[in-house]
Image (cartoon, rainbow over the protein chains, first blue to last red):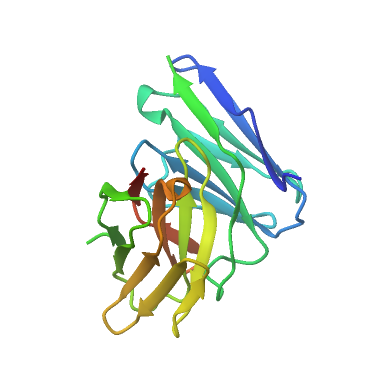
Length: 116
Length: 108
């Protein structure tokens, strides 16, 4: 059974049209992360939540926002998608911060975003 | 200097071969180390953690050299199903830092 679920698997949006990607987890983990991965690139951390505490990476564009209304759900909002935002968006969870010794990440299957 | 660096490959090897990947990291305070496997257009999946003493899981052996700040992954008796991208992952503070990955193609 999938423990970190991302919807949709594929998302197509138009240039400048707001889009929301969703992630849910059944693990009751404290931490939820959003990563962006472009082709042949490493996953890049956009932001994370520890419970309701939000942390934005310094180089995450303002165009990207996130919401975590409860433990189980987390959303990524892209306010005005540009062509350069086409990527795979990965949601991940961990029980505690992944910097703790051997704390593992559990990934969802990702949402592949295309911008036309 | 990037935090985590890997040779992108691709590594093309025949079935049954032994192949090794290396990864270097820049933050000497890094605590935890992992190898993840990622198939094309799929999410990364944990292959194994890397411990200071080195560890083995079947055909896979991982080693950590803290003094030189590198991690290695050895795959013995390669299978066609091992074809994937292997991501080296190192913790830095609250998050994991990923390398770009090394691409492996195992051929018949």
